[in-house]
Length: 336
Ligand code: TRP
Image 1 (cartoon, rainbow, N blue to C red):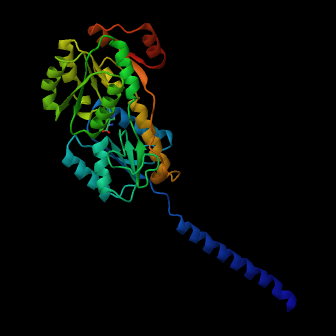
Image 2 (tube, rainbow, N blue to C red):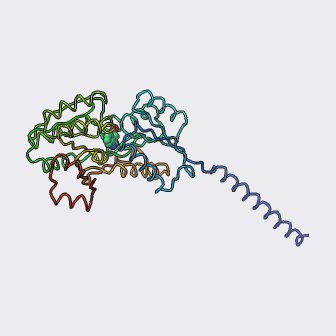
Image 3 (cartoon, helix red, strand yellow):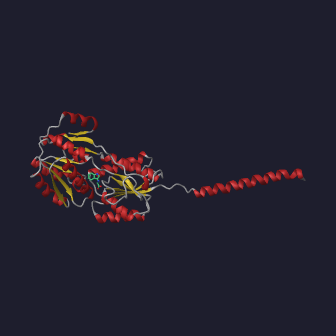
C-alpha cells in the first residue's frame, strides 16, 4: 500500500505546482496590460518659420528617443492660426481625449493647455519666460505638471554684435507686439541691458500685423538700427518690416536665426530646430516615466550661433569684419 501511493502523491504535487504556476502567471499577466501606444498632442500657436522649425525638431527628438509617429506613437497636431478661440477649442479637445502628454509651441498655446489640463504632463516648446507667464512656480523646480524648454535669446551677445556692426549708431529702435508676453519679457530685459551699455533705445509697439507697416515707417525715420525680439506676430510678417527698413536703409537685427534668413542682418541666435529636438526628447523621457515634470528643470540654451545675412548686410552698406565672417563660416551660418 505504502509503496503504491508514492507515484500518486508525486503526481498530485506536480499537478498542484502546475496549477499554482498557471494561476500566478495569469495574474501577473493581468496586472501588466498590453502596452498601449502613447497618444500626445502638439498645439502650435501659428505658422512662422521659427515655430515650424520647432515643430519639425520635436518630431525628430521623439524619433531619436524611439517614438516614431504612426508606428509607436500617435500625435494629434493642431495649429491655432494665431487665434485665441482656436487655442481654447483645441486645448479642450486635448483634455477630452485624455492624451498622455501635450506640447505647447509658443507661450499662448502653453497657457491655453495649462488652463485645460491639470493632471497630465504639459511640455513647453520654446517658451521664453515660463515663470513670468505663470506656467511654473520655479524654473529650476517647476512643481506641477508642466516643464519644458525656453528659447530665451542671448540678449547681451546680440547687443554686442549690433554695436560691433554699427560702430556709429546713435539710437537703436526696438519693435514688439504689446500683447505678446514673450516679446514684452524680452523688451524689458533688452531695455535694461541697453541702459547698462548706455545705448539710447526707442521702443515701438504694435497691436497686430495691420500696424506693422506704419509703425515700421515711423521707426526707420528716427533710429539707426532696429532690434526685434522673439515676437510671434513680427516673425510671421518679416517681409513687411524688412520692406520698410530696406527703403530707408536701416538694418534689422532680430533675435532668432530664422528671422535673419528672412531679411535680418545678423544675430547670435538659438537654433530653433534644436529647441524642438530638446522639447521632443524631454517629452519622450517623461512619457517613458524616466522624468517627472515637477522635478525636471526648464532647459535653457545659453549661447547662440552667429548667423550673418551677407546679402542683406551688403544692401545696408555694412562691412562685416573678417573675424566675424570666419566665425560664422566655421561655427554658424552665412546666408547668401
Ligand atoms: N518664445 C516664443 C513664445 O514664448 C515662441 C517662439 C519661439 C518664437 N521661437 C520664436 C517667437 C521665434 C518668435 C520668433 O511665445
